[in-house]
Length: 111
Image (cartoon, rainbow, N blue to C red; front, side, top):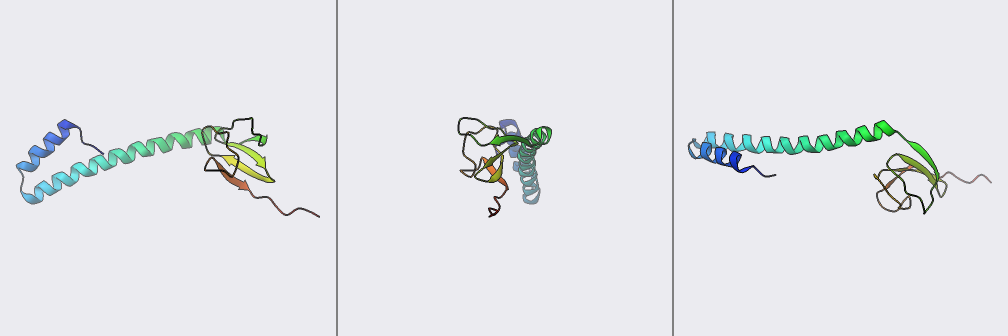
């Protein structure tokens, strides 16, 4: 989190001419604005991700195959369980790393 040079100059000038309590308020206000700007950027990224996922939904892509690539929202079966791809693009095996989320766990074999 960095203030641009003009904002820093304005805040520095205001703080230099203010009483201690006013200077603290000015400084805290500037920090709060910067924090909110960063939070808003993060929220926008999350909104875009939700839009992508909700727009596509889930799509069954069959049994996982090493030679294929998968994208976010693909559902595959692997080793008796169903897995949802969380990554924008992956060739990783379900269960290895953070690219996949277990969707339906393998049940007991019927014997």
